[in-house]
Every structure is written in structure tokens, then in C-alpha cells.
Image 1 (cartoon, helix red, strand yellow):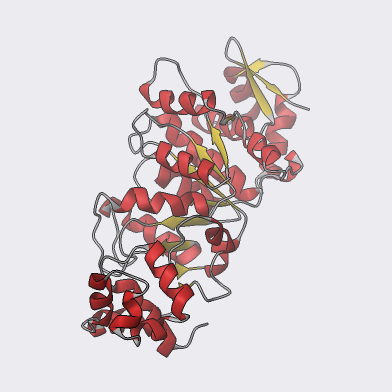
Image 2 (tube, rainbow, N blue to C red):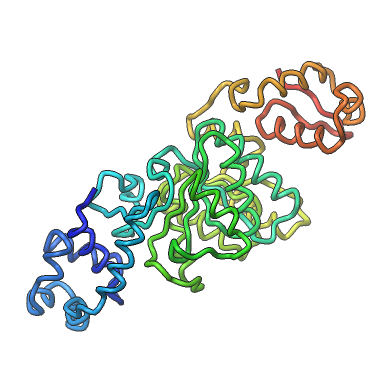
Length: 357
């Protein structure tokens, strides 16, 4: 880890207003470490950046904010990771505009683990929420950390699914890491901080400005090997994430829906543009070259084996499955959805289901 003297310089550099990522990286390339940039003369700085930027760099009125960030980073489970550190996610170095530092709460290694971004509408349908959570759970069980943006709707459902699986979840924030937005996600944020990872490039105390969220989206896709869009209208911010994923060389996946639903039109547009049509979690794994045996996709395999044994191999309807299993309609419906997403059961015309060998 960077020592606190150098870390303070990184934080101070990141707090200088009006310096974009490209300018910061140009300064680092020219001068080396941040303390050399902060100690450079105005004439030296003006050879690399405009005069106004050189003046702002030499203004040293950010001590209180730097000390606040250092105090935050000193707490258990907290860290500020800079571009110079081994813990910095390698995948972010591949994107055009990697942040010079990240505020992290939770499990740092998750930032470098194999991951899939799962995004979608804030106003998702009940089926969309079920799909997001079930896909995320199955893919987390299969070894992919689920990355999303902590918004209501699909994002929150995807985070819950990731937490339920074995590979957890990463939430990329559009605020300072000490803020929870939206407030309704406070319990989810606390659980992610404990069992997964919260990450933000924005300084502590940064409120939820509208412009922060499109910027955050490049990190959601950048941390992952691919991006799955569950539900999205044509004007959805999720399509921005999908476009960024394409620009970053990541795979893009989309779940189709009803031709009559506005929340399917964004996914259908992506599919027309070349996104992979996804019907099961297994489809995602195969596209990423991460195919695992279906029998090992979930730790619920004991329960699932028993249910599948009662199901048999002939097509049957849900009433027959309820009678055979002795389970409630809600439980049978949930199991069938999970098994269908994992590619172990297929739905047939007429409300029938069939086990896939």
C-alpha cells in the first residue's frame, strides 16, 4: 500500500477542481508521483497544462478535505487505492479514462475478480426484478462477481442476487462513498459493505449530481468481462453502460421480453445491434468461456435434485409439480424460474415444463 505521505498527495491531486482524467494522467506522465506535481513551479506546470490549471494546482487550501479522507481510509474495511498500487483493478487500466484513485469499502480483492455487470431499469417489472436477482444469483454461484450501480430496480435486485451467490457483488457509486443514494438502499449498502464491495471515484461528501451517474457507468462496465441488460427502455441509462461496454471491448448481453413492453425495447435494440440474446445463465457463461457443469451451478443442488427427481423427464404443468412435491405454488414457481435460468428446465407451450437432461 502507498504510505500516508504519498497517499495524501494522491488525494490532494484528485481534489483539484477542473482537472479531468486526461489532464491528471498527462501530469503524472510528465512529473511522476503526485508530490512532484504539487511541488512544481507555475512555469513548469504551465508547460503541461493551461495557466489557470497551474494556478489551481498551486493553491494549497485542501488540507481539511485531505485529512478527512485519510481518517476515513484508516478505518477497518476502508481503503483509498491509487493507480500506483497493485490492488488497483487491472481491467480499469484498459479503459480510456481510468480514475487516478478509488475509495473502497469492503473486500478489495473483489475488484479484480472475474465479474459481470448486470444493469437495467429503475422501474423494472416484477418479472424483470426476478430475472435480475435469479440471473445474478446463478452467475455468482458460477464464479462471477456481480457489478452494478446501486440504483433502485434492476441494480438493487442484481446486488441481492450477487450477495445470495458465492461470488458476492460490487456496487459502483455515483456519489461519495460516505453517502447512500437512494436512501431506500441503506440496508443493502450496509450488507454490501460487509459482504461485498462499495467503490467510488468521487471525493467524500459528493452528492448525487445527475452528471455523476453516466460517468460512473464506465466503471461498472470497466470492472467486468461483460454487461447483461435485463430490462431497459430506449432512453435508459443502462444503454449508456452497454455502449461503454462495447467501446471497452466487453461482451454485451440482453434478455428479450414482450414486443409490447416499453421496457423490452432497449434490450431488443441492443440485440439488433449485435448484443447476445440471453435466455439462461448458462448462455452468459458459454459466451464468456466459463461453462461449468449444470449440476455444480448452485449450492442448492440437493433441493434441486429432489425436485427434478419428482419432476421426471416428461412435460408436466405446475399443478402436477405442486402435487408431486408437496410445495406451495410460490415455492414451485420460484424453483422453476431458478432452474430455467440455469438451463436445467425448459418452459414449453401450454404452460408445461420439461427437465433438460
